[in-house]
Structures are given as C-alpha cells and as structure tokens.
Image (cartoon, rainbow, N blue to C red):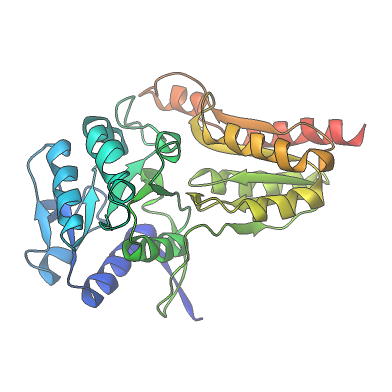
Length: 329
C-alpha cells in the first residue's frame, strides 16, 4: 500500500468520513463537536459534510451515553464522545450495567453496536481530573471490547473496525497522541480487533505495551540496543479481545518479559498479563515478569511532577537491564 504522513487527528477524520459515507446509520454525539470540531480537532470538517449527524449535546454524560445505548438498540451505530475519558465516572451505570450487558441479557436478540470514544492519559498538564488512564475498569467488565491504539495508522484501522463491530467498544485515544504523525495507507483498510503488532523485533526480552507507552518503549528499545540488549516491543492495540498468542510466541523466544502501561501500577492491566504469562508460560521464563506503571497518586498539574509520576524511557531501560541480569545468572 502507498502511504503518506498524517496526524492522528487527520487519520480519525478520514476514518469517520469513510465510515459515515458508507453507512448512514452512523452518527456522532457529544459536547462541542459542531461548534469546535472536537477539542482535539478530531471532528474538524465533519459537521459540514454530515449535517444533522454530528450532534452537540448539553453537558450530561449520563444522558449522552444513555442516548447512544437507546439509538444502538434501534439499529443505529452511534459514536459517543466523552470529551475526556475521566468523565465516564458520571455514566458508569449506562456503560457497565446497560451498554455492556444488554446483548447478553436478551440472549443475543438485541445488539448494542456503539463506540464510546474516551480521550485518556496524561502528559499535557491537565491535572488529576482530566489525565487518568482507566482502561482496566472496562477490561474487567464482561461485554465490552477495549481498544488502545498508539499511532495514526492503527487509530484509523481500529476505529473503522470498532464502528463496524456489533458489540460496544471502548475506544481509548490518548490525548497526547492527537498531533502524532505517521505513515497511513492511502487505500482503505481495516485492522481487526484482537490482533497485536510487533513494533520492534528482538531476541533478548519482550516488552509488552500499548497506547502512548508504545513510543516510550520503542525509544527504550533503541537505547537498550546500544548496550547490547535487543528488545522485542509488542503493541497490544486491543486489550479485549487480547492477542495472547502473540505474547506467548515472543516470550517463548526471549524467555523474559515486562509490561509497561501509563495507568497506575496497582490494579493495572499489566498485572493480568503477568498472571497469564505466569500461568501459561512459566516453564519458559528465565526471570520474573516485571511491571511498570504510573505511581499510585492523583496526576499532578505540574509538568515536572507529572513526568515524575508517569513512566519514562529511563524507567523502561532500567527495568529491562534488571531483568537481563537475572536472566544471565
């Protein structure tokens, strides 16, 4: 495929334009979509192309998500914009008790084909109430699919797959990645949910990650190579469904692994991955699986303190070196 360099925001606009032209049942609902094109310009130009299908709402996440669930039940394919992922807290009943469970409770007779768009993560000094990474809450909720892309090409391909899916999808788009540029195919393509990608090949250690931490881990991989450690970096892309076979294939080769995510370490998804590796691949391990996550504190506003709380390249390198020392004993 021929590619060109575009931003994540542009990739989102392209995906939404293509899908909304293909399917008239798709509409987008949320705050500041028409008046501002979305606070990260992810809907720029769409209101003019799709009049009455980009809908501004009052500030009420409870009603926004509830409207999306109701519309999905009638055969529409809504995309619900949460503005910030943190605001899911005011719509947890609609998400966890309705959106996630209706298809199961009705024996498959009803579908909820909707995407809940949730810009998440820190790194932009948005402080404690606008910087959280909450994906593990929803991985823990049966009935939801959870997407966590890291670059423009994956954002576009995974968004198209999420829109076409007949189950509800939580789409966590990291706020700091909207301006990130990367190669995106010119032709139409769709990336299936539940398929990880090996973003860097290596033979010494497996680094499992997702979302913005993929870039952090790739930079760590380059620095580790300078000291003779070849790290394989796996970008999960979706947490549910999880591509555990991709993890297993890499760990069986390298015999050691670490998991890196931006969410707080305690209760983070890294613990689930580490447990799965321990249960299924224990005989291959030459060292314990280790985890890196944010410190267990509310996210500070101060850029200096925010960087201190969030995982950095140096943290990944230090952890990898520690694992390799144990592997070589």
